[in-house]
Image (cartoon, rainbow, N blue to C red; front, top):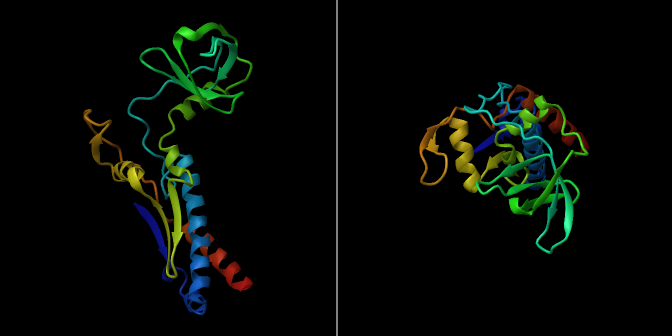
Length: 215
């Protein structure tokens, strides 16, 4: 799925000016526009809002915000280490996977390896902030890797492709889909992901004028 802008959609007096640019320059301009559109869509998605500023429908079942976790655990190599996580998940077997602040990456520890629970060193923010983070939706779709910015001589495009595109389309249009392969079907709420609003167009026109002034 994608959101795109034809250069001809901008203010009518700008079209003749952009028409004077060479194809290479128009593609360069298109890419600059696409990146600006990606940035604005990323900001809205991370704020859990649609293109017109409308808040997305909340999750049907709210997630509980996990409390910060700090433990002493015995690693596979036999060493005893300290680990603190502010964001993590527990498996059905009790294993814990989360972000290791010290290592700066994901880590999984086995339940049987936990020797002692300790008081957290770091603050994980207010409970309201933790709940907001725990219930944030589709944040990963806003990454530059999944939200692509592309352009040609006539068009700037922001799009989500591949497996992520199917997930995005289900939420964007409010379709029926399976929660997981082989699982039950679920009617998803419509949550508009990509789009171009009046503020975007005004920003793009200002960007275009600045580009022409440099040409």
